[in-house]
Image 1 (cartoon, rainbow, N blue to C red):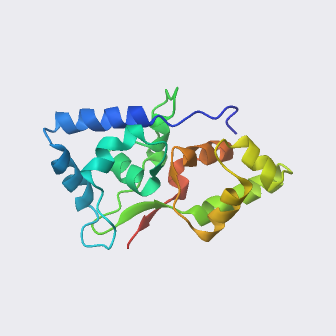
Image 2 (tube, rainbow, N blue to C red):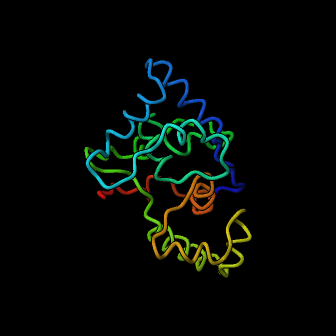
Length: 174
């Protein structure tokens, strides 16, 4: 297990996105179109230019958006943890979803892993919530019903579990 939980750096993600956008000579509209192209033809709502431009100002961004941005950047979620210094292994890379698919977190599987780790440590859900800033006991229990989860919060769960994000990322067709 990771001894201390490190925050996910939304500002660094935004800076990396901006740098890659400029390096490829893309406008914000072209960037949004390129990211959205991967799941064209699905009922998924396209990611807007304002969402991409405004991520750094938000306290939470849905994982549906951040996972698509990370996929486009070719980066792992862990690479944006404050103090991250190691390179990602091939096993930690996000899957390439293919046309008509998006990346999503499998929150049911995340809940199962949390519940197993909670039981292994002999903890109650309230005690787990106290270890994870920004989570309540009910929020953790509700992961079993499959809701979307946002960044940066999701990374606290994954660090507490000592698991890479990719273990809970699924290719999803909507």
